[in-house]
Amino acid sequence: MITIIFTVLIILLMLSFPIAVALGVTIVVPGLIDSSFPTSIVYLIRSIINGVDSTPLLAIPLFVLSGAIMAKGGISKKLFDIAALITGKRTGGLPIAVVLTCLFYGSISGSGPATCAAVGTMVIPILVSLGYEKVYVTSLVVAASGLGIIIPPSIPFILWGLGTDTSVGSLFIGGIIPGILIAISLIIYVYIYCKKHGEDKEKIALNYEQLRSRGVIHVLLDGFWALLTPVIILGGIYTGIVTPTEAAGVSVFYSLIISLFIYKSIKFKGLVTVLYEAVRSYAPLLVLIALAVAFSRVLSLLGAPKALGTFLFNNFSTKFSFLLMLNIVLLLLGMVIDVGPAIVIIGPLLMPIAVPLGINMVHLGIIVCVNLAIGFVSPPFGLNIFVGSSLTNIPVMELGLKAIPFALCILVALLIITYIPWFSMVLI
Image (cartoon, rainbow, N blue to C red; front, side, top):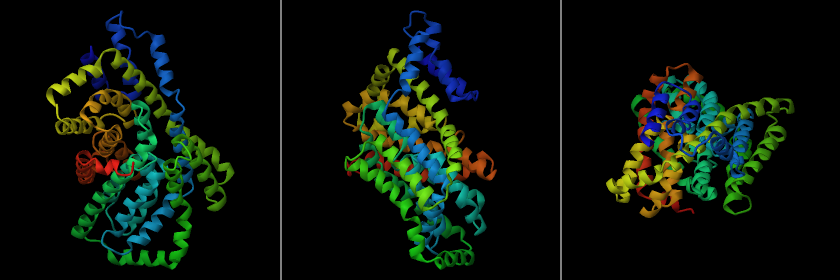
């Protein structure tokens, strides 16, 4: 039965059915094949409703709303100006500034695609006007935006915490150093690429001088309130003043205050548009989460966790071999399924296997999310690639091929994070 439902799911995905439709069809298959299987329509509907009936889950729409307010308020431009001022006229300085902007903006939005859209809309035209190839710049934004699901607050971390009963606060704190490590790996590649292919130094120097002409102190102060956002969110969680859900609520009010009254980049009448965009972004994810929870419960009734555990213990009995196989499976999975349902389905399956092997669930959650971040930039279905393509009209496959070196850089960081738990656990 397990083989049948996974076969049905894979076939539907290969036929380009929406993931929500594929999951919805798959969860009714066991009941159609075996009338005695305990998954009545009532049970499935209750599972779907219970999948989103969770207080901690409120953090997701709140962080999405906060990110939408920040995007509308032009926060990404202020962050980029600070990063460009720091990197200056050095080799690869502006592309490195893109990575740093994605790093900080990811700590606001909690979403890879949201980071890609907000940062890409702003930086791609700037870098293209300074002589960089459009496809290179777009692939850089596509890859660096994956930091949005690693740097806290991360929506996938919230889902992992809910699915495995792991502290979301610990996941947030644990993701800081892995996120920085991934950013460093991307920066190294950017530097080597720019060193090899060259840059238009004259245009870059002119742009830098124009930035400096605004005054270093002015640029820093202008971006100060944006930079303070992750400090408030993570500081509140780390000190125990607020829970992650409460921190999400704080981030919404904070983003409203600085956008409406400090930067004055949003008018009150513009809030309706922001709310609409936030709901439009979150609603599909909500449906996917609800159906993924129902799917995971069907798998539990079928005994999938036990079957998977027996298979892995018989064939990959050591921590090293288990983590290696897990990375391979997750990399392949990340290419064909969205991060939200993937985490909701995978978490309960992996927990009974990882704990006996001595793998900390915070460390495992970070490994899973980094794998799926690579999936964001991997053809054929990498979501960030589609976002980048929509911004620049570059064909999806051309952009995906250009993003492969960036994905390999993240892969190197993944191997380090996987086999050196210190990077994930040192701050906890």
